[in-house]
Length: 254
Image (tube, rainbow, N blue to C red; front, top):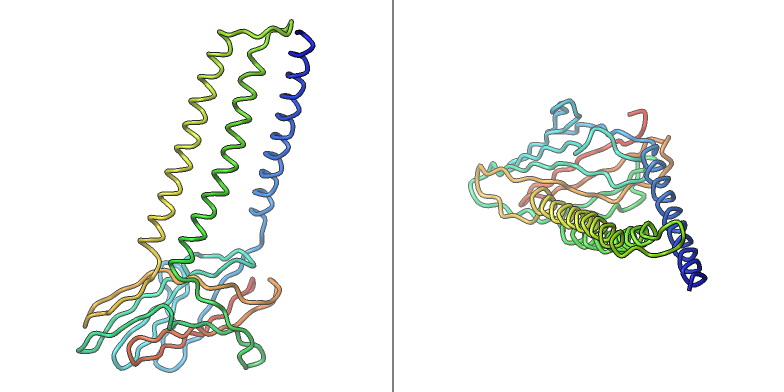
């Protein structure tokens, strides 16, 4: 009987060791992500456009016959290789409603003065799908963590002589259950907050009424090129019959 307990304890220790290695790997990945270099964006004002600064960030205002568009970066810095996110504000200056459709927005990277690469616009629906996928992956990791807590609780319930203590097992099990419940509840709440933020912040299709302002975040696939090289691209924002072309430069030295 004692040999069986010792074997079970050894197996539990092996599982706990593997779990700790996984946690260490996740921590290392997080620390590595925190060291990713960042880039900034600047705008080149064209005809009927004006470069401005809003809340310490570069922005551009584009005015056409029936609409005004203002674009600025959603953050002060963009991690190299990640999607740039812009805040786009649109006003209808005309006398009739104007349609804005996210599917009509486009972005094209420019190299040597000519278009070189289409940069996909990431719509709200895709962002929601990606967030739900992240939540599924997170649930799997939390399940592994919960299993680790349960094994740790059982391991600590054995006496020095290798005997299992039902009282210690009940106490340790209750603590592990409470910790797991809090961990799972926190993950669920965070997921709901993330989905609500996408619903509230990401720009969507709109019929813009006269004098009305609408706006939100515009997510774009990252431009190609090394992080230490400045990259240029043009974001085209149609509003009704008006076409607003926003020229962006992104890089570390911008």
